Image 1 (cartoon, rainbow, N blue to C red):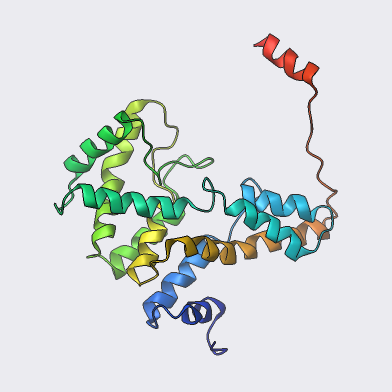
Image 2: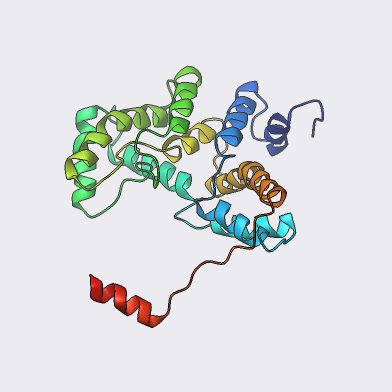
Length: 237
């Protein structure tokens, strides 16, 4: 530990992976970009829900992290990185091109598989966090093979997804590139990425919890429905 460093820089140093300033900088960026969030996602909402009972903040965020561990939430960046690695392997060492990745994406969808890292539950354009990471990568790791592949995917995949007519947002999200950036600097333990995600999101979730208490928000009571109400919904369809 080095108390003279900022919080993110010190965390990067304590990981013992890479002592360069670039690794500290990408860690600062990662922690900043993932530190949001409004309450619409699983981890932030769970933290708010448990905290609304005036539970200890540590208990509240521990519950949120349990949600973050779910593969549809906090494990997304690992899935994206693994997909890029698999795609690189399947290309057999060939330099990726837009034409090549366009066909690869079509074949992937035709086989019934999904392409991770594209689309978002709320956003309807390219995730601005992705744009920031891409700008960082273009400056600091332009020759990284996985980044080159990810960059071609950025050009090739959205039109393929748009053509299906089924995807509301075909653009990449932050998970499409975050794992690639961390791995470039030697953090190859993919399962640890969720831990960094949790360290980062603690800032946003705890800030929201403080505001909830300042505002005196009541305990959250999600509405429930009985079988009669559900039957009526089905009947009205």
